[in-house]
Length: 253
Length: 327
Image (cartoon, rainbow over all chains, first blue to last red):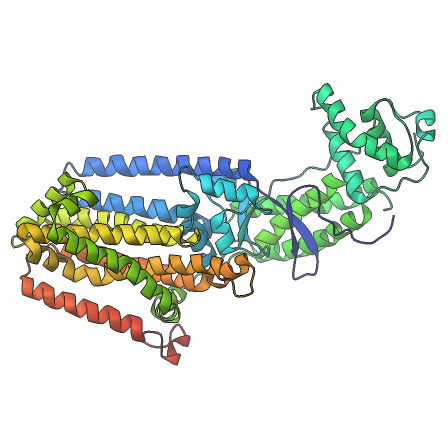
């Protein structure tokens, strides 16, 4: 296969980083679902802390005339505005919720965020929260190509996923392709890396999809390949599997 | 590629080692020199593996695995810079007043948006009770008038002072932060919060004065208002600046135009927050104290002068370029 580097964007939403070492790798960007889950965990943590502070200082206020209440309000203020800044500084871009979901805030160039980045992105939560329950932030985030909310846009940060990705064995099609099936396909398939990756991602999900849905999905792309290679097929899923087999293993059955 | 399996087989011990090392480092805070050196080595190797995998088509899961490992290693190697206390000082005593002077137009616009409704509120409430009741609920007005009727000749309990100081931090800094943050909506949020807060503060001032406790409330607010009102105007101004950068981009992209302001915005908001903390301490402990009114006036005037002098002159000296430079 040719040794040119494919710089076309991948299938997942990624952020490509050119490092000082002159290599390029991709961060996977965290989408609205992961971000919301992390937010909810942090919300629970903060809720628990506020409850503890509230109960503690209410008890204290039985014995004084408000010194405890003052201190409690100060702590609640720090928690409301400083929770994320403090945790992102202490844990290099993570909060408890983000850590649980293997997310991390980094700058758009892939470098760790500084205090002023964190300060800005977290103050802007007040705008992202509008008009209620982070509606605006979620809307902006969903429309943005890098899943950035308002705070991320102003501060120049993104949230990336550090979840481990496992290497799985090569796909073996069941039942193995017969010589007759393979002979109907052209010897050289002009498929790009992106085509092959898309096929592989589809075939890897085949056990988890509802069979009817699987057929439906395959039927959406199979005609395109059939026209391109001037072949016909009966079963679109099988056809895609054969294309993948031919592209990755050539003639071997 | 020679063979995906061979590639994975040959290289996976190194990948597994990097994975283990990263897991160790994520729980341990200070890595040993050996670990750092090894991490650097493995990181460089995996970077070249990423390139090979991508150029030779090792498949999406191999590429994703390597990308994720490289990203994790990258985030460990390039940790955040250490934070020095000198930098915070530099931000507050040098960058903050400089940023304010540089963007004076937004400060003045914010002052107008805050000051004018405040004036209207004051005059309106002095003139007619109906005006005051249109702005704020009657019970709240009564409560305000009541609380200033007595004056502060007997002072207040120290614990109550602490409670109020805590409340002022929670409430006022929150207002200032919201005043700033909502400016990202093309300045609209800042305009709303400035006008609203100006009107409310003015109305309370006017109503309390109309009910006969004018000297009491003025003596009360004289100490902290130099800090508090200025800081709210500064926050609002920073919000307007952020919104304006979205509208007038000067040949940059909207995002680029917004980003170009980030450094100034951080300095302005950090400065405003610091001023509000000072204000909360004064408002909680000094303003309600039993100190004679004349002394409060004097201190208030000194504070106005001090704040104005600081904002006008701090950070002009080139010596401050070094964080440890001058006093």
